[in-house]
View 1: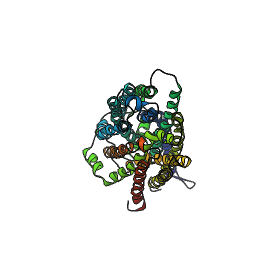
View 2: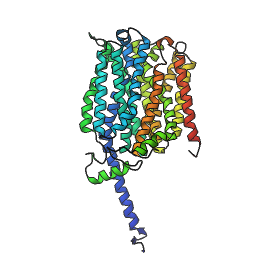
View 3: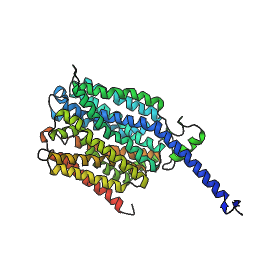
View 4: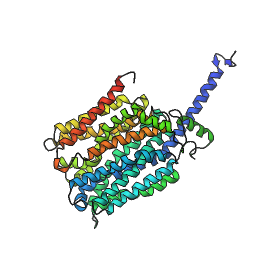
Length: 451
């Protein structure tokens, strides 16, 4: 043959060799992904579970007497204590995360995890509003560096057809933390102790975070270029090639100014930020006020603690399934629309059928609301990271999304005062309006072929 290939009995040997090489490379990639899943995923999901336990245990602590012991029964102070977490988060997310890209991921995340673990444990010693608020602010400050960095970290190790499902497992710890948090709070409510049970709760959920910070310092791989995860240089080369499929690699100590500016000026990033505002408003409602929402349905404090398990477990299963299919189909928009519609239906049920009059229907609404909101978190984030390109632009875009979402979380955390219960018409109406607006902003680019 003129091109140098050899044909035997009608078989192109050159093409056969190319096919064998592709199959060999695919097998290396499959083994590599399995090893990454075994080393990276357990550490990252444990971190996010601890993060959400430490940020969302205020609702359970309220049912255990926190407001009466520390805030003199002032529900407005409780609302501020809940929302001040987001002030710390919003103020430091962008500068902290961008600066953190200049360091190895394991070292930067160690600082973040240790910081919020100490802050969460210190909340057990609060005796007034200032002490509780300071603890909550510092938790927000250190978690502000962790969550965006973690989402970016996944894009270094997983391709576009893999990352949404892994991110959903990671974010799914927010749902499972609600289940675990309710179970832990229920168990603590049954023990006999000379200390206030909410103080025990803060220690039980805060101290393990401090311990795990040292685990990731020594065992979490950094970037494919420097990690000790690989058995040989061939595997490292495959991993680096996988990392570069969806972004331009810059290295752990590099920030490219023009890419950062591009992230701040790209209208598509800000459109996705508006989308994230919608589900974060609902998410803040769930994480802080779900125990009180369930209590308004007629359950006792103790029953409300473990009743939070059901909605969170349903949300976790739905989120994993939706994101797995989204990865296989390699599309995000239609799934975002479907999940948003489910959350709108749930919120509308809660608004239309007040808990005091129709507790069963309101409880169904809670399940729909939670199951619809949680899949939107990984899908919305991956929608923008799939299209960001360079690393510096990608991490900038993630920060913008996180800040935008938490700005709405501040509003949501102030929208459910006890005096408006058990119906909370104003709070649910705000969440419903934001979710409808979010649906509009998701539907427009999905409908238009030009986008």
